[in-house]
Image 1 (cartoon, rainbow, N blue to C red):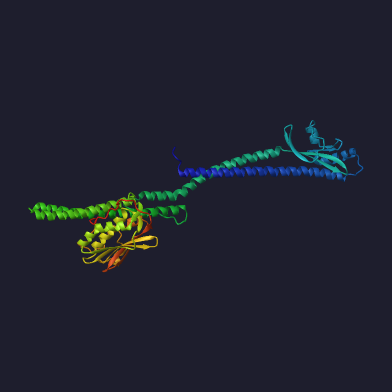
Image 2: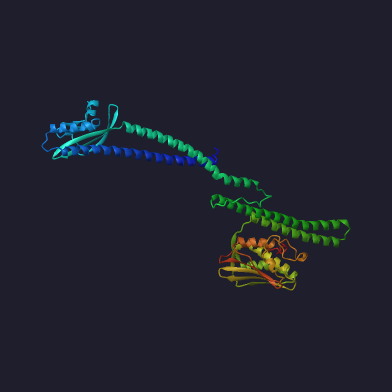
Length: 484
């Protein structure tokens, strides 16, 4: 079932709320009118009883019932002849009965037994509805019963007319309020429609457009601000993807062009075995560089997509260092660098990913060897700081200039001077290293003194659990080229 438009739903809810409110107001108004009319009728009936009391009290005490009857009749036929009024003494004799009751309702019989207290009741006489009061009064030791009533025909007609008018008023009010609610909902939703129309204009080519933000601080302005922030994030993501794609294409195009050039030159002129071997060595180096670049690109792509996971496990620092030394010792010797490993104490165990931590160290060691001139030194150190084990790679290389410090972790950013082919790289290594550190809940810190070297460090939680047997360290290949 298709849901109704929000404009219609708002109108229906508004009409329902108005209908309930108007019904409640109408019900209360009708009850208040009934109550007011009942109070007026009861007051008038009580006024008649008080009039009879005052009249009887004003008569002489020695007056006989017959004389009292004649006096009441003479006095009340003039003022109450057309009203419902009867007075009975304690013996059941009529002291007064208005001509209206006697002539119009000769067979009307009301209770003549004096009640203990006054009470009101309604009854129907012929075609008339009557509101009656029977109240006992006692004057000079003699009990009388006053019976009086009011015809309700006019009152019922007024109430009926009031109910009809109230119903018509409520119906008209509901219709008018529903129409008003519909236009009010249209007016209220106009800014949202404008936002939606503006949002439909935005695509991947004009993500710099922002939605209008109303001046009023309400839900509409919050919606616009939220969408604008989302567009800003999407714009940055698109820009990052475009830059990443462009840089990756450029990085892949360069080695492919070199491979093609080498192959074309080799095929163009006859070569002896030694020359072919030299060409193959250069091609092999380029393929290794391309392999490292592609692996880094895939790792970053998986990291961005959430496919790259980190599993924490206990890692003995001694075993990690032995593996690092076995892999990197020969590479450092070839680069004529003094490579040392230093641990604050034996038996240290850190909590990290068995693949991520070695890969992070591999990136840092590769950068240290690349940017440290021959005769320099590279030190891998493990220190204990509170509940953490801090791993650091310190070199005596060229260092990092202050203007490069803010961007060395950006993808495809190179801190090496332009044209320095000896230190050329993809600019992905430190970006990947930063991601690995962040997934471990730590931060990759760098301290550098231009011309005197750099130190990269990160801290991991110390643990006292032994790692299961078996060597799980991987990712320490020195040929996986990275760069700052």
